[in-house]
Length: 393
Image (cartoon, rainbow, N blue to C red; front, side):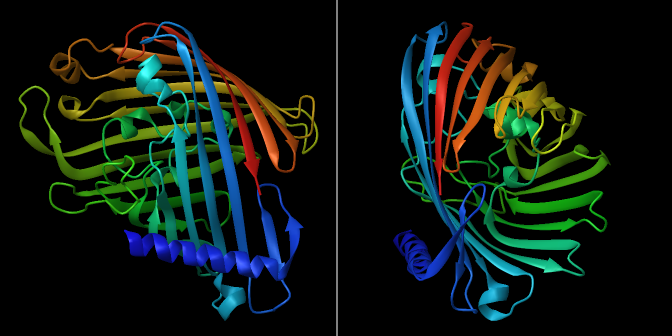
């Protein structure tokens, strides 16, 4: 662990040294760096996200907590560095702080804040990418997470609730790598025309225990941990509109809730539609709708059997970089699981309204309200009000 962390810090220190020697050019999310030396190109970034949420009613109790995540990393262009055409290397790490708002106060399974982690320091991304063919294919090998590439709705990414990112039919059912844990894997993506794509990834089956002592390398694979295979296809049915269909299969061992026996394998399928209803262009008002759904098989061994969510996102309302959204998410839990764990709710629904505005190039602010119906662990409807601040360089 210590050697791995030391190596990562060495890479980041090298990036900082190169940064001091070059000229900075501003980008939307980070400051890209162009160096005087023609044989070097590194794009470092640093970010900090802070959330404060207060539960006004229901849940385990009323009250508020704060949490935050520091994120640092770099993308190294191996083409510019070594003449290795189409190749790059990505490294990142993060550290979290604060209290578990969902676990201690609301008692929901979906998790109110998608940045919360009790990890003190975690090496997250550590992978190599190679463009193949005429640039229509991509191969990635190394450590990354499923939700970097799968189950993603672009309009849905505005929302702070975790259930609008990876499906609960994945996050609640299998120990695969999603934030805050990444794991070794390989991904291949094929997109010959830009109008459609097909991608498949294989990951280690267990991303690790998490917690303060997990530095990002506590994963296990093979045997009872098995492997996780994800596949997804997508096609653009009009400009700024896409349909995606995918699923996963996990080969590891799972507990059969009705008997307590160990059984092999678990999977789910999903679909996503992102559609732009009103397209006012880059600087004019736009309106997007998203709909997602997922169904898990093997009801005798899954926590969440299905999930559906939908939402509307309006952008460029008052400034060039703002977005207002409202969405609802509903998750249903398995009968065998509920019989084995009495006292839990049979379903959980989250209604979220949020508004994000990019104040300047490096700072954004996002007030947020979430009403949770039937929080899975507490059972008492909760109303959470919060605000997020983002700093990025």
